[in-house]
Image (tube, rainbow, N blue to C red; front, side):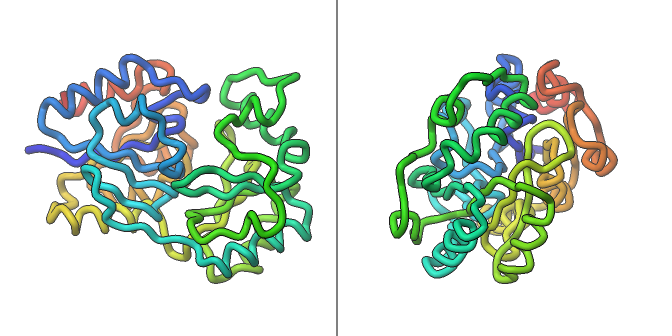
Length: 279
């Protein structure tokens, strides 16, 4: 019976240096050849999905942690922050001097001070991903970002979510209290301590996106398999019939899984596909 496979990207499909293991690419291609459908299910917006990932032959993308669903080139769902919500968040973050960037399918747009003020967090994030970035600038670490925007240039109506540097955990708590109409979250790469907060569309999660796609396909949850490594993948696990945690996954994710494979850097995805007979 063909399966519908949902793959988180960072720490699952690609390693913490954003490298696609050859074994992972082979696993996806073989699964597609075997008749399974494969979707990326990620916090990344479409602008952050490289051509190399599309070249695997994937069927589509569930992006922005659930705000965007694309199937075989067709946009099934795309829920965005309103212009007013974007404006309010931008003004709030600027008032607190929290560097941030806007995540859109049309690009990634950094706040005026992001290049300097976010540099320590970016270096720590890169370090956790095994990448040495001492001496590198924010532009070198994060080349996909568009810098130099200010004022009303950051008031946009095409934003999936907004990520910002956390100076403390209280910043995350305060963002959740300040914007009850939005969905708060945190992230930070390998490790448990959050480096960034984010604000997205209310009640949008990876689980919601899976439900939208299955309804679009007329498919059954019983045929779904989820792969992930981080807490943000827990809703994805709840939405799918079978859950696989990477060997590098957070303890909470490993406990929620039906099967724990090897580390992303140790052919974990390939080994799991082989174990489940997906190739």
